[in-house]
Image (cartoon, rainbow, N blue to C red; front, side, top):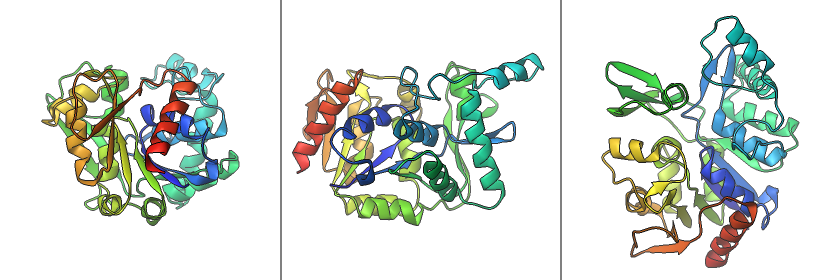
Length: 299
């Protein structure tokens, strides 16, 4: 069974961890949000791709669900000592990978190609794919400011009013051939419980992705536990988008191409087409059980 995931950097990797107990990594493709990427101190940060790569490489810090376990921050601390405005704490090994990726991109290699090469070097057999090789980045409009999503969420801790969510980049943003092929060749596509506005919607906005999903069997998993997201600013972002910040709003966003919608057993909303399962993945056992229940419903 081949499964393709649409993923951000926190919720969906927890679900992927569970699926790995049921499937070979060779049968897993992950199409990853790149709208939070940024150039920083000469390196290229791709936080969601890195989280997924580190998961498959067995080096992910699963306490925070970002960065490399046991990493040091000597470079980051030195930049601060030099008076630099460093609001993103990157580990030294994490930064080294970002530097390697920057070198590849500056040499003309696409983000898809750079990701493939990094996966090879890390010994990863899963098919990890950036959603696009185009420039496409999420910014937040707050007052007179238009700031990168990382600045909004990390530097300001999400404590700014959101007037508008803005995508900045190329006029046309195409899903890569590899991304579309991964969807078309999958027996099951899983839209994971990542932020609907900043993690999943950028993938859906890439040309060709929605059309491919409409021809596939798609399971979508709500990121809401009760009436609150597990983590992150999903609620504020969905409200800024004019959506109801709950599983009903998530279902409405995905409904046109979703065959099965999973909501949490603690959800106060009961959707006509929803199936309630335990989606609060605090442990690998819960993730594995959820993955098994999803597989059993499509096989």
